[in-house]
Image (cartoon, rainbow, N blue to C red; front, side, top):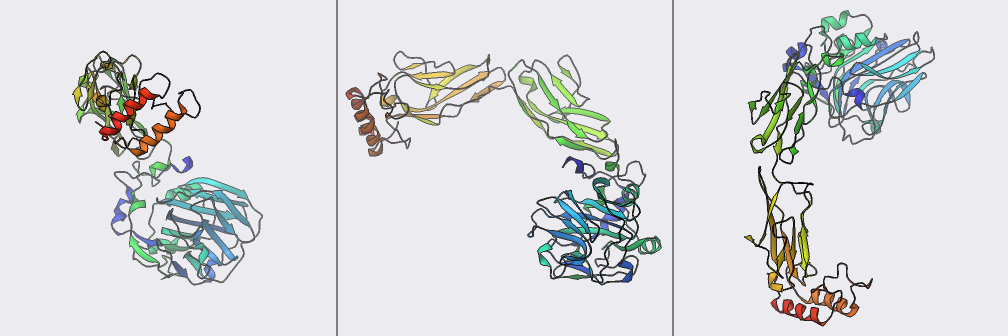
Length: 493
């Protein structure tokens, strides 16, 4: 899809902007069509160009859609076939079926297809760039005296197109890539359309009807087709005023972000790097912290480039970083990306776990993290206590006692020079095997099964052997006494 990336961004100024207030389009979001009765002028046979602006709905009800066709069923003169869920094609009956190209959905793009018996080439262009080509015989396009349709093809409803169309032009000449690009954003007045050689029909819909600018091939909306105002496609910029959208020229075009600026969570004393990724001719950058412009100093570099670097990150560097980029007639700002050097928890202890002697609650943190730790039980700081707790000031707390009353909700406060981070809590309760906050008959069934199994090494033993409360490798009478005490208490502490 990268070949369609050019030319899809809106810019701050545009030669075509004067047309935006009254830019009418054909809306086929709910289906329907414009039907243009047959006229001898439509019977081109040695060359053809079809071009229009299109915004195809990705959620088209039908798998297939024909925004422009002069055909009925499997016969006719030609059709443009756009498929939102696969590659698309253009059929010139008796000559070519050119497929293998894809049209973006839910956005305005310019489409064109050309052929002539002289070149023996059939081509497709998206946004002024060729995306498909095939060699064809020097035959004449099949002729048909049926209606020209924009949308569905009458009673052949399985090809109902859904989306919007504008600036439809139908030619009996093969237009070049440069001609297509040069005039894609121009609205043709009726006087101009009537004077251009080779132009069979021009439909701008600016009067909210299907009048042909040449005055010959007027159409009628049918089956739910409506006209609406939609200025979206006219916003393409032309900063160098050469009548070609800048986004379709190398090194030109409006700026656009190609990726957001990533937020950073780092260890104190390390280096932060922010990058503004843009497409288009960026001429200047300015980075900001919390909305205030940055300047280079002993620790900050690149404040006026695409990459900002801050070495030896500390508390004062925490905040939100963004960049303002200018280029041509465009100015854009990135998202505000956070920088934090508060403690980082890579992996939390489980949300709940049955209690047993030497149960370990461990927090995963970066290697060499300069943090202090303070574990808490039910919000109250705890200290190391022989036979009860160890590791109260490390990233691993060990609960040494199988005493039911030592259970509760545990968390840890991590601190460094940049601030504090509180871990997620872990609820610990002896004999609450199903972690439902009570020790009841369901837990008794589990204990009885493990008691009968006896050995923690037995493959039949429950995973973790949590019924071995005293951690002596067997589930025996000593564990039964502890279970009975917890069962009598019922509710976890």
